[in-house]
Image (cartoon, rainbow, N blue to C red):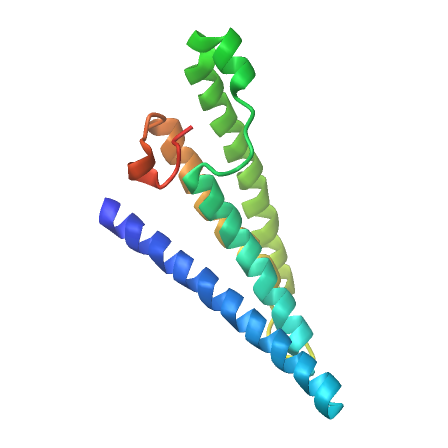
Length: 162
């Protein structure tokens, strides 16, 4: 199971790198075409925006998994050291509720907008919201895993294991 999870996160890293490279190439080509040849790629702005949203949503899930989100733990560690495990579980429960709302809302918006087709790209506008549903599901899985096994090490999860 751990190997499958590692493969999944390696694929997500590869997708993020590909999205970033495609966005850079698309925007650069559009700038060159616009200023050099007075033309451009009509759908480049929309495709770049879609790629950016997917990159941000996947990046949020990766940062949560690695424990790289902003956290202020000095107060609880200094004044309430015995309560830290309870506070960590409480934080993961709050995160689970928040990403559950993200998943639920994004999934509903995906379904509501799937049949709306963009005139420039011909892609469903629900693709924008699908990124939120997928990243919300990934982050919910991370939160559930951390609720069940809060003492995972950095090498187990790729993060600090808060």
